Length: 250
Ligand code: G3H
Image (cartoon, rainbow, N blue to C red; front, side, top):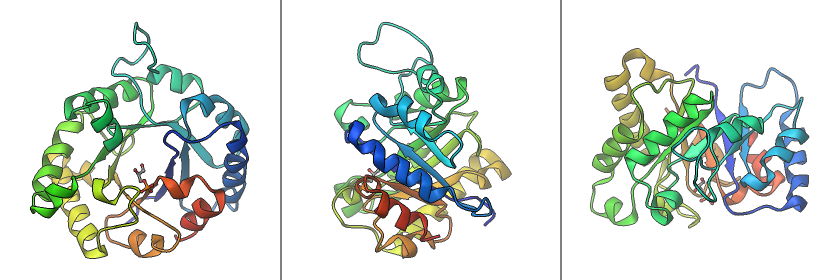
């Protein structure tokens, strides 16, 4: 496919100023010849967002945030950050609807879709996460669950430019377990069909990332699956060497 792949790291609630060395090292590692057709993104905690973008000016590493509020700009929402604040810090992307947000902060599909719209409002690209639980997986409901999550979590004005989809089976996150390549292929092909059904030809343009225990050792196999246009990496994105090894799996 002619979709440019994206290797993205989600640092979750990890990273202090000492971790900025890893950001520097990742930026250095991905800033080789411009002909490399893979994008790289790191989403540090919001405490490091501004310093991370400042450190990576003039490199090819993109910096994003892990969440934003449903309201795009300002308001009485203690502890939250807005899409406008992310843009102000020179972030370009924001993850919305990660399963940890859905679970720990009770975010449903509608909330996730509203957050994606807040991102668009500020010119950010939303990385919309979906994924089935272990019990949904075990009882054969994966496709139904994903179909619904995909439909309800994406705004009608989503495009391949303002939206990236990340498929993260919840049972694969931080567990070292991953679906087999055939399973990932089935899910990603089904998501592609859903997107084309809803958005027409424009549905071909969305990047579909796989996330859940992506490691240097399995990246090549997972990233070569049809309709897998990159990775959303948790644990292995914290160390520059691991992130870069996955990046170079392409
Ligand atoms: O957003 C990232 C995912 O939740 C994957 O995390 O690579 O540590 O399994 P993991």
